[in-house]
Length: 290
Ligand SMILES: [Zn+2]
Image 1 (tube, rainbow, N blue to C red):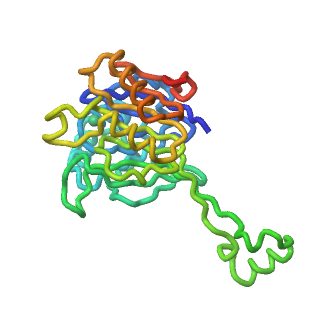
Image 2: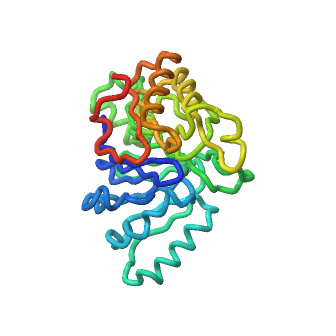
């Protein structure tokens, strides 16, 4: 399914992705509320990748308009002190706001967001910290269903009911995972398998090439070429490239994407979030390589 994704993502300035059907927001940079307007009311779960200001500056206005009993729930990297600081500030700044829930999370944890849908947290190396400290996360939306085991497929309803009665329902079924969507947040490329078999991948590509010095100091990012190399060797059904640096013109970015599609023989639809532009329902627009 091609979810309705509305988004903005420009390195250093602001990043956010709103997935309408799931009432889900990944990051909350400037402009999120003023772009999705009344639809911000639909957001129930807000997952923040890390505490860089361009990924969280939209929170005060978003909460001002939407905080209510039990919602929104905001999930953030466990050891980022910015979030408790912001929570305390907002409690004083907008004391009438109550109800929202602030949840510190670590890697490899699964959160139910709706029906069979879960968001899983994945550690990434954008911010270099020792094991056990959580400051930067990627996220994956997974649908988990239980399916009748092969050996029981031929049994009648009556026989199945009998086994369920004797051994319990879970004995009859296995869990099937479908990896619906991945959101890289800010991260270098670390592990190709992380996104294998993910249907829709939103990945950062801050720099077009690995120019000397761009990625050596401070926090780590991906280059477009590294992302495309990874895509060429894993199974992903569609790709949304995001978080480009505004040092590049739109033409430079599009040319570099098309050159890489050719070089790495990328056949899947590729969409891109150009600097300074917001996109409504991006997956129903034309892919750049279509
Ligand atoms: Zn960023």
